[in-house]
Amino acid sequence: MATTKSDHLEVERTNAFNQEKHETQETEALDDDPVYSYAEQRKIIHRLDKRLITVAGIIYMNSLMDRSNLPNAGIAGMLVDLELNVGYRYSTISLVFFVTYTLFQPPATILTRKIGPRPFLSGICFAWGVVMVGFGFVQQWWVYIPLRLILGLFEAGYFPGVVYLISTWYSRFDMQKRYAGFYCLGLVASGCSGIVAFGVQQMDGLGGLEGWRWIFIIFGLMTVAAAAIGIVFLVDFPDVAINKGHWKFLSRDEIAFILRRINKDRHDANTEKWNFK
Image (cartoon, rainbow, N blue to C red; front, top):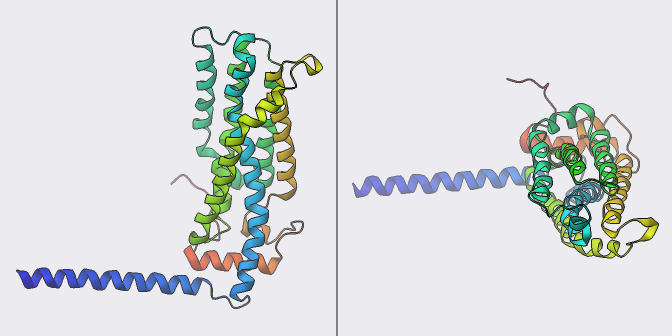
């Protein structure tokens, strides 16, 4: 009995060692490329970081800030002006956003691939920025219900779409670091939104508008500006970008290296036709 148990433990140790050795070999092989040295590979990936992660992070920052503008505006006087502190009015307005935000997230990945990340992600960013500007001109509290539903519809597509886009450009090991940087940009912006909103609130009375209205207008215009950055600098999927020109981006050979790296890592650089099976 003791011998059998000892043999079993030895087999487990051997399997664990072989698996670790196999993973190490795969990691080493990932950086072996027939065209570029390791140093050149890292330069290409860092250039990709500056373009993709920075632009995607800027739009995501605006997304999180726009969601937090409702409580910021409430503190700045919206609750009193629109009588949102009556009954469940404010809670209802806060809740309805997540109805469309949850329902329309699943199709977003498909639409990102079908339409393309540059027009789709930048387009919905522009759309929810315009909606945010409209928040600043509402005169009746119930108008916020359809506006929040529309806002949830547009914002639902960004996060799953951009996460999918990032995953197509990086190997599994590199991907986690980029997701972390992407999240950090959003968290920093979310943490600073209250401070920025307080500054914008000081515009109270300018143009005959209350300070809380300026919060929506200014943040909405910032989102529209982020959409303009996205339509210029956001990149396509690598299997599509290799046949298209992107201003001051990677060359065709460099994108081909990215595709070789992805195929070496997980064999899915080439897309398959969509079906419901």
